[in-house]
Amino acid sequence: MKLETPGGTIAVEIAETPAARSAGLSNRRSLSGVDGLLLKWDAPGRHPIWMAGMRFSLDLIWIDSDGHIVAVLTNVPPCRTDPCPLYEPAGAERSIAVLEIPAGAAASHGIAAGAIVRFSTNSLQTP
Figure 1: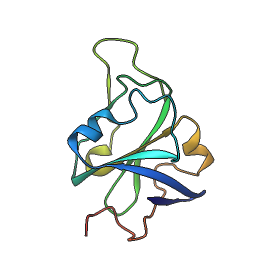
Figure 2: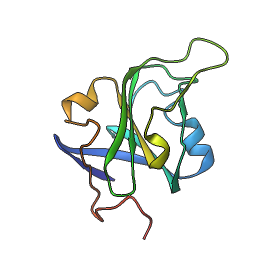
Figure 3: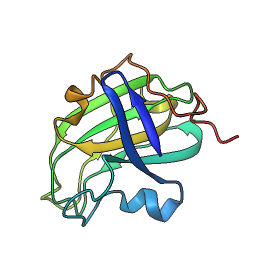
């Protein structure tokens, strides 16, 4: 799927099931064929992220149902402790999705709190 960002279009894989969201990009050595992974839920809420099993640092972007970026954490490192910390910045409780992209990609695509991202339907809501 394509995601329009302030800095251009990126290709994202969608994780819509609990298992796919829980795994995220864990245990992958790289992103092959896509620029990131979008973890998507059916309703807004608290969606904390952890970095268990990650092999590289990520930028984490929380998005509401209208495509507004509500929170961004950059250069989040892989988890090296047990238990892994959970990441849930202030304002993220109204998110419906979290975009996981390689560290540094948020800045290069103009993704920051307050920016807007769009899909072809202009909404992250399931039709």
